[in-house]
Length: 217
Image (cartoon, rainbow, N blue to C red; front, side, top):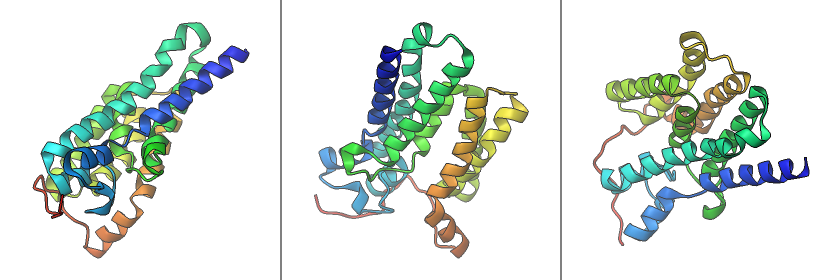
């Protein structure tokens, strides 16, 4: 039992550290000589990277941030056969890893605990947990973004729809997954409070693949 707690605790910490990889910050610093958090919205995520540095820089950031979520959930499979006899405990462990990697992205230890909003990493997590609801949620995000061109609005709508799509459309009834989907539906809008205010005030920036910020290398 001692080994169980040591190993599972280590894997949870590893999931957090994977989430803490500050992709946007490192891409900005290594290839452009800037701290992305000092430009645009100040967010260390793919959207702000595209806004400031363009799609060439933002696309790899998005892909890696999604893969962080996938990788963290996959960690559970490495010890599934050894430590998790029941689906309930296994589902609970995947839920813990999911939360850990998202918290790592939002509060990264490698970037002074100032990271992104966790949307791309959350997308990776839900794809790893159940790809069908994730695909529908991604479709909702793309639809909202294509009509109104607000990334924040698309993220919020996709997050709010996710638990309903999971349960009512695809019948996912694993309790840990349901709890996680509700957490996402609450967590994402909370992280977008400032965006919501700007949307209400009509000041939210619309998304464009063209970089807008100027800076000196």
